[in-house]
Structures are given as structure tokens and as C-alpha cells.
Image (cartoon, rainbow, N blue to C red; front, side):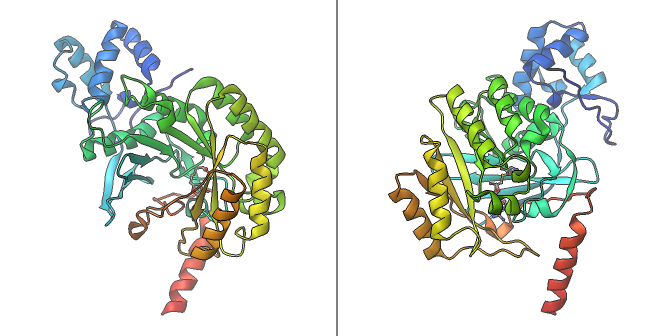
Length: 383
Ligand code: SAH
């Protein structure tokens, strides 16, 4: 894979330097070769970066002095800047991370008794315009660089006191933050390969999950280049409703999505795909919708469903389904023999729940104008 490292443009003495967080293992080896260094040196440095979370070359004590000086002169380890660091009552943690002085994205850490999950963003905003997602309503600015994606994990690991291979706090990563990860394919794959790599964060394939709104050709491509888990945002199992909720469905309708998922399973027989289904009151939560979902799942018998109660955000026209409706929906699926989990809503007191991530998006699509108008209207109605 051709790697182009981002040359830093910030003002903190790193201008013009190569950001080493932009390289996966092979890329770093190639880069060291260009510097006239042995490739194993790259691996030594990688361990410092990801196992010891060290960004200062001066502290990389088993790296020769001359090489340290060379690295200091032309490179840096440049994670995103932490602008805000918030903890919720339930232990959920959210960071607002500055990317380039004009934009910021959010990353969320969700601790549970047996695991700790980090939710990572892949783009500044999102171009897909899913109707029920606050990121979608913010419009789109640009793809994140590899360094900006893996940098979210680096910052979180450092701040949480993550110790690789020991009592690590981050045991799972989900690419379920802002953006459509498959629309930023190369950078996301490179970042995930650093999450998987033993010299990186060393997570097993089951513990790194990419979630997509259904970019069919990229699902195939993903299965060819890296071993990770797949989640698909479904939200409706009939084309008319799904196209309304997830406009990408017009381009890749359910029949094509189903076939792509079947190909994924055929290539990885021991894996499953999780279908995310956000429940919105009166929109997709009725018994007939559950029936359609059951019919859909019959074509993918080893897969499972993750129900997400809708998380409201300012300006949205949707509401969360009632607890009773949610329970009935889940029961209908379970009775049909479909493994169905209900995602607990975490961190909603700090707006860190699914679909609430907003960050600061310098919208280039003008989509956010509409939602801002609606928010202003709501505020003025409330006064
Ligand atoms: N673009 C990718 C990654 C985002 S993942 C994707 O669509 O899969 C975020 C998950 O949260 C998706 O399943 C998304 O559909 C869901 N989601 C978005 N907005 C939500 C909201 N307001 N309430 C609950 N879930 C939401």
C-alpha cells in the first residue's frame, strides 16, 4: 500500500516534520530504509510509540544517539490535541480532539466489567446524511489521516494509563465514531493494522470492529486486506424505509448488501456480522418491521442483531421508542431464534452515546445550516 505521511502543519515546532503515527509497520520500515537505517530499528521505535506510549525520541533509550538525533530533526510522534476531556457518571469518557486548528472529532471510552471499548472516529463529519445521526447533520469536512485515527487511541491509552499486554484498559476498538470508515479506506485500514499489530496495540481480530452504513464494494475489499470484525448499520429491512433513513441504500440496496454480507461470511466462515438497528418511535419499531428484519436475518443465519435505542440530539425529528416497544421488538426476534442484544445507553449525560458525537466540523457541504436553523428555532421557542 502506498503510504504518504502527513507533513505536520501545526505551529509547535513540528512544522514540516513527518508524523510517525502515519505509518503502519511496513510503512515505517520503508521510511527507515529511506533514512538509511535498518528496518529492525523501525520496529524498536514502534514499540516505544505503542507499547510505552512514548513520543519523545530522547527517552527511547535503546535507540542509538545518532538515530535519535536524525529522528528528532525530521520526524515527530504527533497525536491530536486534547481540547476537552470529560468523564460521565457511569465511567464513560469522552475526548474532543483537535485535528488542524479548525476541526475536532470525538472519541469515547466505555468501561464494562470485563472489557473497555474505545469508539474511534474516521472522518471529520460525515457525507452520508443518515437522517437520525447527529454527525450526519453536521455535514462533512474531510477524511482523517492515519495519524489522526490511531492518534485517538494513542491519546486515550495514554490518558487511561493503558499498559499493552498487561492489565490493559482498552480491550476493544469500534470504528463507530464520526464518519463512514469505508469511505476513508486506506487510512482506516492502516490505523486498524496498527491496532492489530503486536508491535502496535496488539488486539485480536474479534476485538477490532468496523461499522459501515453499507458501502458494498468496500466490504469486499476490506475482507481481502485485513482481518477485523464487521458491523453493518441496518435500521430497516425494507428498501423504501432504509433509503429514507440511510440514503446510501439507494446506491446499494438491501439485496446487494445481503449478497456482500454473504460473501464476507463465506470468506470468514467462523465469523459473524452484527447488524445495528436503531429503534425510533413509530418509524421502524413496529411488529411488521421486526418481521421484515427476521426475514432479512434468515439469509444470514450466523449473524446477530444489536438493537440501539435512539439517542436524541438537538434539532432531530425522531424520538426513542418506548421501553415496552423495545422489549417487544427484541422478544419477537429472540422468539424467531435470532441472537439479539440490546445496547445499553452509556454516557448520555455527556452526549457520548451512539449518534450523539458531534465535534467541530467546518462543514463544506452546507448541510449543517438546516439543523442550526432548527436548533435556533427550538431555543427561541423555549424562551
Ligand atoms: N458510518 C458508520 C459508523 C458510525 S457507527 C455506520 O453507519 O455504521 C454509529 C452507529 O450509531 C451506527 O450504527 C449508527 O447508525 C448509529 N446511530 C447513529 N445515530 C444514532 C442515534 N441518534 N441514536 C442511536 N444510534 C445512532
